[in-house]
Image (cartoon, rainbow, N blue to C red; front, side, top):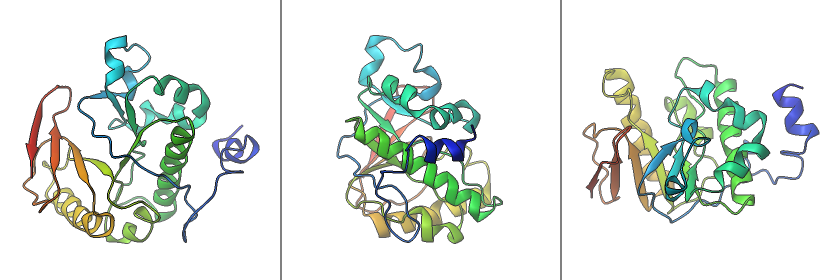
Length: 209
């Protein structure tokens, strides 16, 4: 059965309320602030001491495509952890908009199902270039904890410019309570929004704001 057949035949969206122009599933979000992250690819082998961490999806898409194919299986596993970021299905600037919208839709579906399983969900910011702003922020709550990644951005000038442009738009529209940034500081001024930087593969934190 294909992914899209699985969505409708198994009821993943059949009984989910869909909001806004783009009909994305709603996510409430959380005020809970992650203190440590663990990659989705390490969850199956995690120790009990890891359950205090927050699961992230800042990985190549193929490493977490399985949560879309079998959400009920993996959400049960993820529910053991402190909280979970929404999946970071890729939005590349050269990707057709239809595919970008689909990947935002998939992320929102999984986030909704996580919250239905009584999980705390930190929303991952997803955007590419200004053409994505109309849908990528649609129906998201204001004044919640959000997350984004700078991994790979600092080595590409165009990517760095677009990341900053999208973050300006996110701050304006969503007014985050706090941001969790996975990666290094790339010199962006978050104004009065508190930020925690978490370096990849390290339990290392730098606070700003």
